[in-house]
Image (cartoon, rainbow, N blue to C red; front, side):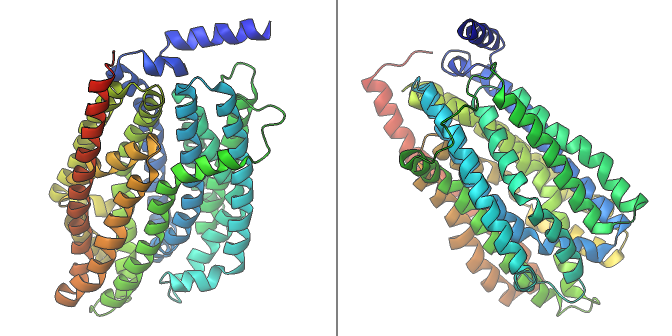
Amino acid sequence: MDEERRETVIERERNEGNSPDALGKESVAKLLINYSVPAIIAMMASSLYNVIDRIFIGQGVGSMAIAGLAITFPLMNLGAAFGAMVGAGGSALISIKLGQNDRDGATYVLGNVVVLNLILGFLLTAFGLLFLDPLLRLFGASDTTLPYAHDFMTIILAGNVVTHLYLGLNSVLRSSGNPRKAMNATLLTVAINLVLAPLFIFVFGWGIRGAALATVLAQIVALIWVSLLLSSKDSYIRFRRGIFRLKKNIVFGIVSIGISPFVVNACACLVVIVINLQLQKYGGMSEIPNGGDVAIGAFGIVSAFTMLFVMIVMGISQGMQPIAGYNYGAQKYDRMIEVFKYAAIYATVATAIATLLCVLLPDTIASLFTTDEALRKMASRALFLVNIVFWVAGFAMIVGTFFQSIGKAGKAAFISATRQMIFLIPSLFVFPLFWGLDGVWYAMPFSDILATITAVILYAVQLKDFRRMITVKPQSK
């Protein structure tokens, strides 16, 4: 009876376009929409919450609280690095195994994702809490911003294991043919956050700690819900006894594929540290009181707004990932190339809209976050300068995810490393020598241009190989 029930569920999901085997049969354009739209909605909702959360903090706690929040970005990125390595690596490996018709292998990947997230989550929590204040000082915290950053990260780190598990399992849920359920889990966290954050900040008066607590509580609820879904007999891959033992080949597969998003976030951690330190240095040279802290606060506003559009691209990437991975595993290279093409076009449109808004309405955007005149002016200028060529960045992000999806982690990691380590960090030291604080802002669009050129070259070379394989083995739609 269980087998009959499972077949019924699979047939129903196949008709809805959400079953794993539909990835190799349905229209690529339709599949990308089916998988991307839920991911985009979820990502946009999550990012929109982050923007609203910063507005709550800016309006309810103060401008220095926004700067304190920006100080925490490197540590948040470090946590995201390990979470993404397991979550993205595991979900990509599951897609490839499903494309190879290896359902048992995909189920064992699920178990290893859980165990790895538990181990890494606990280790990062212990490390972060033990060295929290020295780390925040290293990231650019001043005597003014340190208390805000400390209060926020203490609660976030305490819930770090929950964050890792929730994000990892939600990625698995999406890759196993359930994009709408993955979207609903994210929407659930956003809805809970939007209710609890203003309650904790404005009504209970808990300040920035209230914002952090709202985030952790929302993720606890979502983790419970996702865990129940993956425990159900209706799930195509689900929890079962014996899958929670680490297997060397699976761990290696997860890490080798997940090394790319790990590098992205680890590099982002280092980059944000350098940005904060340079903003503190050159902002402090201005005539603005607490100029360094104001500059860091401006960067926090830029990051929050830009992240709205990065999340759209990430949603498109997440929609592309299972389709590209499945068809790569099934050796249907023409379908894999087709989904990349659509994803790259959609991503470029999204980042172009961001550029347009930041060029035309930077002051309006900055005014949403703060009433502080100095912070508003600096954030307005930063929004314009940082995003002037952001429209090119969508393509590079899609190329990186594409290589990750098909298991070519080295190329995906190289794209990320060149943008952040080879292009951006040297520019952050050189450009301010000529242009002062503006030089910090100039470095970011400069690195976007060079990273996109690098991505174009790498993809063009890879495309030739795939075209040759298609010629050798004719593909079918």
